[in-house]
Length: 328
Ligand code: UDP
Image 1: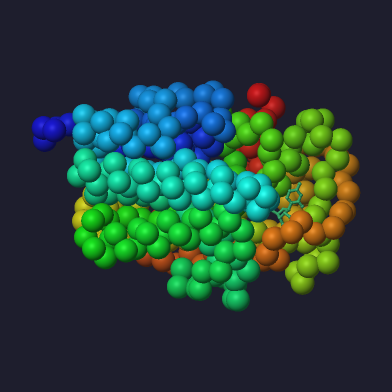
Image 2: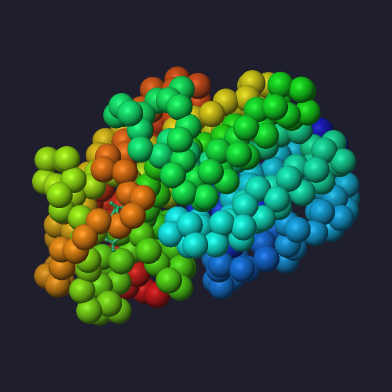
């Protein structure tokens, strides 16, 4: 590449929810984006930014060929299965894709000589944390194959980094929600399991009622508490992480959240306020595997990347998600 060529970024899973928001932000900032996606979990509706390569990550030779031809500067790896209960039922499916195919991706990168990696990790690696807010140094005790698959990849990355094979930033996402404020892209799950999406789809009439899974947790109102982060702030964190690596930063693991918790009941109340619809809510039993409270300690990402969120407001997150829902 010549001196004036733009930085080239591979985005695996770039047709998915988070990957597509990051692809858009990268293109807007002048980066060149190559989206790799097999469209296993997305329709392709969000494929608006970057050049699309319909590749499966199991195809290491195909990846290697593409990498050798394009020589990207960075690989951002979003492609993965993400449904926790499904991972409990079908662990091999999760390990095969989330670990096995990540190994193939890393191997293709190594063969092509690409050494910068951004990984979509998850707060699920912590399991049920001993203390809140949870710090990056907390022990990893995942309680589902999904969380385990993310912890395994983190371990592999750490070893590769120690051996000088690559440098990486692993971003541990807390609860990602919201949509592109410009309304171009948003979540496109066909079977949404996430609270905010389910609440909004219930408001829309797609579900007859919303269930609250458990009201007997040791929390102020008895429902689970989560740290919701706007997808555009998360996208910004990826850009910062990439710029950090490209300017020589060393490998890091960083929580991505706001450090502030909201209960399920609070989310429901805000969803009703945003939509103006008093949808039916039913209280049911706990969903297996839900930690009572999951809130990030966020000092590290602020310090290392200078991360300054722009949309730190649950009302706004739900509002952007609702604007997307209403249109689609
Ligand atoms: N939740 C709920 N009803 C739903 C979906 C989720 O009560 O229809 C609860 C869930 O039990 C958890 C919180 O909302 O306590 C956030 O769940 P979500 O699936 O959005 O994200 P997670 O924290 O599991 O990644």
